[in-house]
Amino acid sequence: MDKETFVMKVGNITTDSYKELLLSKLREEVYAFLLSRKDEDEYYDFFSKTDLEKELISVITEELEQGGWKHQIGFGGSALFVFTNEVPKTCWG
Image 1 (tube, one colour):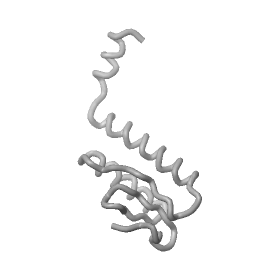
Image 2: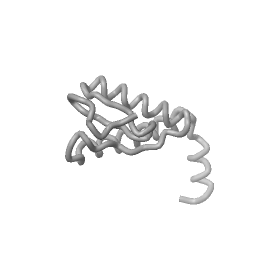
Image 3: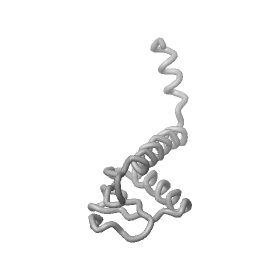
Image 4: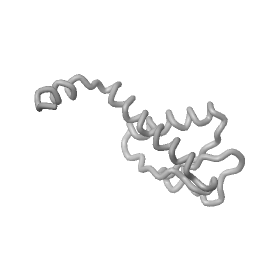
């Protein structure tokens, strides 16, 4: 791809499409995590520094709830625990 084509394609990205792209990637990562974990004490590690990151994690947790999963944000807002019954013992504020 030449430079002009790349600049044209990047120039067409809107804020909404950028958010949707990031949300899609986050969904993929959380799904892969759920498939690969060995038990519910394991957590998805993230750092939610910006408002956008917090918004995306909020969307993901709402989707998990709709799917019947329970969740808890732990370690000062940097870990997502996903479980079916009780909050894992390794999860703390």
